[in-house]
Amino acid sequence: MREISFDTETTGLNPLDGDRLVEIGGVELINFIPTGRTCHLYVNPQRDMPEEAFRIHGLSAEFLSDKPLFVDVADEFLDFVGDSRLVIHNAPFDMGFINMELGRCNKPKIPNTQVLDTLKLARRKFPTGSVSLDALCSRYSVDNTKRVYHGALLDAELLAEVYLEMNGGKQKNLGLVPDDEAIDLDKLSDEPKKRVAAMQRPTPLSPSLSEEEIEAHAKFLAGMKSDPAWNKYLK
Image (tube, rainbow, N blue to C red; front, side):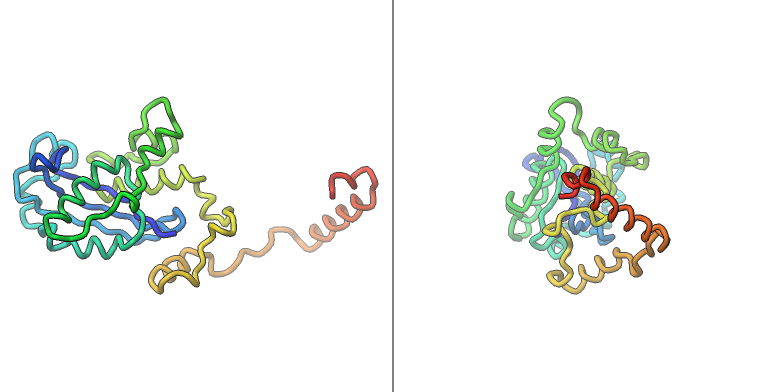
């Protein structure tokens, strides 16, 4: 299952009021696990940077002035996303800007059916208390000390960790998932297949028990099976 943990930074809160996209960050996930493949793009908004927005993400109009326009990176963004689900914290905000920019350059918009809002998930899971990304990082002991400013790629990476914890934690990467959730390499294309294969241990670990301990354990089980008092527990 391929998903993209995703975040954006903007010049403000409302694309209908002239605010624009300035940064995109995406982290590829396969079965909730980051593969190491990311998408990080800065975008020239062709306008000034309000002080309120600058205090949040630290991206100045001067810094963004030589960055490409969205129309110049739209295909790169869409190729990275493909038909995978976007995992977003407060999805209506980010998708409002993404779809506005896609519409500006006559690209197909991303449907809501391709988006998962982790803010909604968190509110159902934790009906009381804050469910901001920082609050969830604290709840799940995800280190967010580098988050001095909001940054699209950094926030996407933090969200990827939080999303993993919301779906059972790091045991997802230890083979402790049902067979129907396991990664089927035969169904992956060549590039994801290589990345997933690189994540797997090349040589299985040797047993930590000695042959004598294994033999003693087998004898113990055999003795239990011959004891009528234990029969009801071994059926």
